[in-house]
Image 1 (cartoon, rainbow, N blue to C red):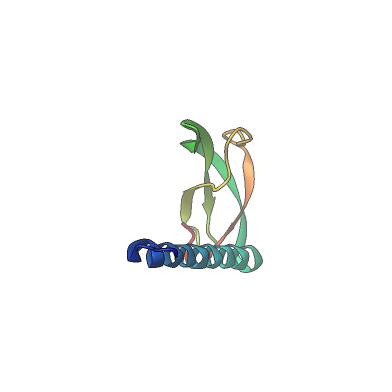
Image 2 (cartoon, rainbow, N blue to C red):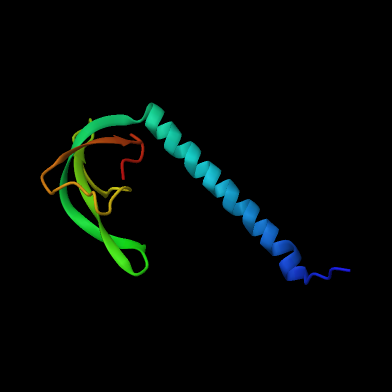
Length: 101
């Protein structure tokens, strides 16, 4: 006979389902932006250093670009690490026109 504590019996599967739903929604959002997003060229202007595991911190490029209505936007790229482009490099940027940040 297997005995489960109520906390472990229900909260762990519930947490797993919530995690999977959140991951699916994030993937759909990224796919939508890739398909329908605004495309511009941006400039690498700086780096932010975020954890890359095992206590290391890798560079993530900060990219500045202009929206079609002329707003200047500066964001940290999702991709980085040892292959981060140099400051001054230009990158293709795809963003949600309603939420460029």
